[in-house]
Length: 420
Image 1 (cartoon, rainbow, N blue to C red):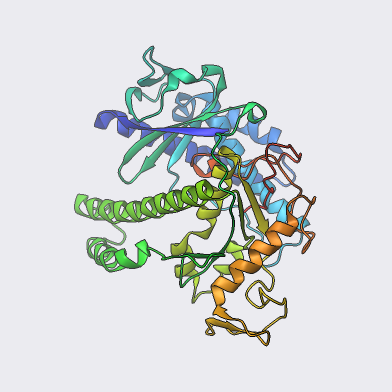
Image 2 (cartoon, rainbow, N blue to C red):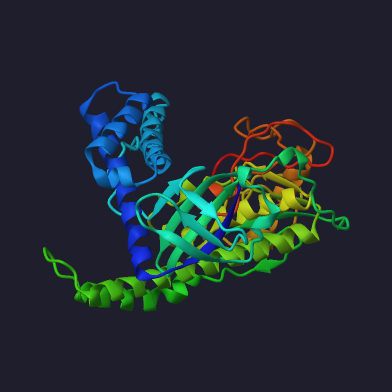
């Protein structure tokens, strides 16, 4: 699966109709969740039947396409299933009990309720919400795909406008990697908070810190928004404008961060044949309140996802290795040298004196090269089996989708890495 995104152009009446469709999808999801809470033991089929009852009872629900209502039911059920799985697996901490949504920003259609124009530059929504025909702006050529390949159509509201996303099914077994000249070079990457990464050759890439640089302006916009907020009353247009300016600034920061990760990952993949990096548990690391802001601003997960995607696209090897003792192990003799986070230099009895991150990158590369060719990691059994395709980005309204094939092909030995 991959996603093609276009920005939509219409009038205010159409935008209000999109908002109404999104609110209806939110209403169906919350009603299904309440039905599950009030009726012990209901399953997915029961929620589908309840959705049919809602369409009979509420005219505004019936006006939304039936498939769009079904996807709202599926969203509610996925939250319920995730909660059950966390309880069965005895996950530590909060189990993720499903919550009611109050600020949903998207509605999903399946194979009905929409229609493309002949030139594939406009899309028309045919349900009774009154969205009508909208112009699409973007660089993708929809003539290259068959309409049968489109499995989902997302309508997304963002701070800077409305977007449509086409989720397209593609047979990955027929995907031929783009051939590049062999670089005859392997590299290990150690990501951190002082540098974005340090590779095994000693090259350092600085963290752009887009959020840190924009934080002063973000705080000022947030104060302006707060001054216009009226508790217990309907909000004024000035408050809505201030909130939109604040949201657009956040959106700009997130896009800058994503583009930086994409460009950096592309350069790494095009200049090497084998890339080894740490299999970090970023979701666990951000629980540290003192480092959470810096870790999120560094965007390690996004960088890793683009590394894996470009590795698949260009037929390069990407290996995720366990991060245990990569900073403590000597890259020359293998001895474990204990260090605190404040110690930035690695000194060993063997005589090596080197930057801590440079040493870790060398250790990562060595472990990555010893792992290549084996079914699993030499360091930990938690690493998944080898796969022909890396994990990618499409589940969160991004360019790619995760997949879990477990096979070994001569043309690619990318290691299937755990979910981020």
